[in-house]
Image (cartoon, rainbow, N blue to C red; front, side, top):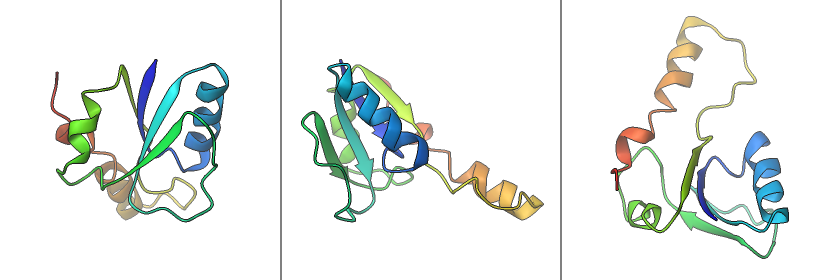
Length: 100
């Protein structure tokens, strides 16, 4: 199965991607930038793009069976009213993904 993942370099995404690969799946991770510390694993590919902005990355979505959205601002902070707004607005990725 081919999985397209946003937020795949974050806390949960890193573990989920490794698990999917260990089960024989292919994973494409959308990331805003490569840090050089991404795992070099067969079955994982990285695509540069911002999930909150329309772009060429959207074309790659059609080639996948599953979409997992883990992108967004870090939840490891004090949840003030302002931080809650940031958390919610940082997760509005699906509005940019066109349905098949």
